[in-house]
Length: 137
Image (cartoon, rainbow, N blue to C red; front, side):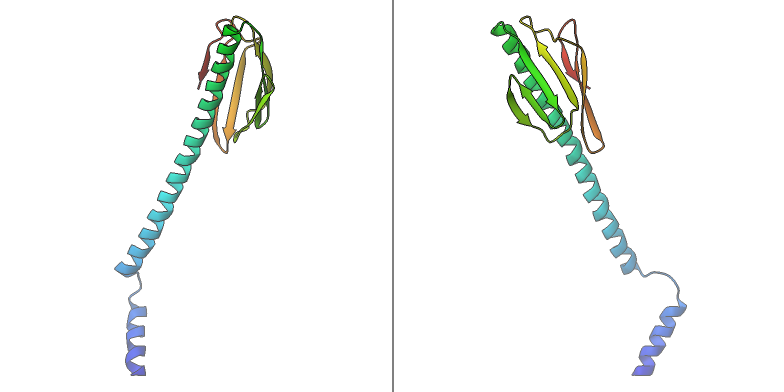
């Protein structure tokens, strides 16, 4: 019995290479890791898009408030915190440090490019000076 086992092992060692089962196991592990990476990257991208869109909508709301209530609305970014007229919001993204206000016509006090980043993903929220137009790149 021991000799038969040894003979089978010796014969197997002479056939250097991988069996089909071993290759299928390795390929399935690699495909699972690839899918895991793809979904986590997509999730990061979606999260960045969500936060930049959320900030964009809040800026539009601040601009509309300034025009409808005929008053200045102050906007302040402090890293991962954004405040509009003192109402603070904690962000999951870092948008740097910016301060400006919308006047009674909805125009910003200065032109800005606000870069928001989560990990390696970035979105830029642009605030135009003359028209007061806002958009996300």
